[in-house]
Image (cartoon, rainbow, N blue to C red; front, side, top):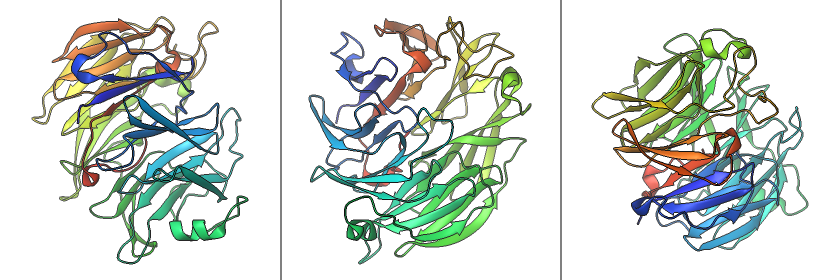
Length: 403
């Protein structure tokens, strides 16, 4: 199956899918949708009813991308917070978060069936929950796994129990296990081991989900350097878990002094390697078949880093963003009345990485450490937009969590 790049400007309200074989020449027509930026895009495995899904946070719909010209919508509760699917890619779960509010207020969870096009909703617990879906064993159906915040906990609810609860958004609760940390941010699911990894202030917390949803606490792995992870990325091919660790000053107005490391855990060996990288803002790294890419935003210049499987890291200077974050303000504060800017990136293959220039409406292709192509995306692409590669992978090579 041909790989494609899903490009979205969630502020301007459009998205498009571009084949990576003829990338950006010419740009295909854009489609309307306000992609829920925090929930991101959920890539589905080969054999699933569609290639990817994402939440439209304006229309309250799950956008189902079945092919280059085949797109459908399923009703969805918003504001969308996190997306996940089972191993078959048929059942998609979406949690709700804060949206434009300062505090979480919605406890709705949507379960969508991509084969029938139907969805149902239940109520769980307010608090921006993370989500994963674990395949059932033997006679069991898939299990929805929620990672709660403040207080931190992992909760499992069988899909059958949610179905049986019926319509009208009933409250449905399951089996719960308290986490050591309250501030969960970043989740990954290892389908081979049935282990959910949660990034909290206490460390990399691990919970095994077995049977019909029983929970087994595993030893928490401490962060290997000062700081903690806010994003987890699973590389199922190499069975590695990658995270950008943020340390240094706690205050967000001193973000240019944040000290960053990229940690890689080898899951089978339970060992970790750590690589120091530039100070500044690291936002949502990407992994693909042993390759890792991340950007660092800094007042002295932004850089893209691409680490290859052999350990070599290529660094590329990126053109400055005209409304980049400023020292003395948080990276999320507006600049001169314009949205806070950052960058989205996506590894396309072992040589190419796509990266946006937020606020300036450009997408660049970096190949072997050099910018080879830069294309205008027609709108500013405020906040960096969103990029997701849709390569088409076997079920065992998809962790089933949206990014």
